[in-house]
Amino acid sequence: MFLVISILGFLGLLILQALWKEGVDGREIVLVLLLFNSAFGGVSVFAGEILVESSTLYHCELGSSEWRQVISFPELGWDPGYHYFLIGPDVSGEGWTQISYTTRDRAVEQPCENIESIFGELP
Image (cartoon, rainbow, N blue to C red; front, side):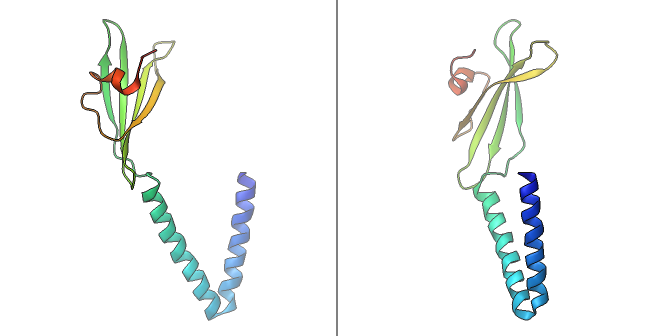
């Protein structure tokens, strides 16, 4: 796929170069394409909810020796939401691994106290 995209990009640059050398009409076409591409890219980023605010990490004690962490990512855009990741200690106990993931329309206050309402039954 990378090779195909690279070849198409190279061909696109050759077409743009040929249009640019064609004269005033070709240059106008190139400028309109560049403006359209910039505007389309900006709207796509905003509409695609790619804008993410800083994450918040919560340390949750479920039992005397059982710990989980909840990471929350608020997301902006036309359809904003909140992404929640539940992570727990890995097998070695030296790192963390993802257990569950979910999205919510609104922020959840005190995720550690509402962990089952966010993620459902814990494994």
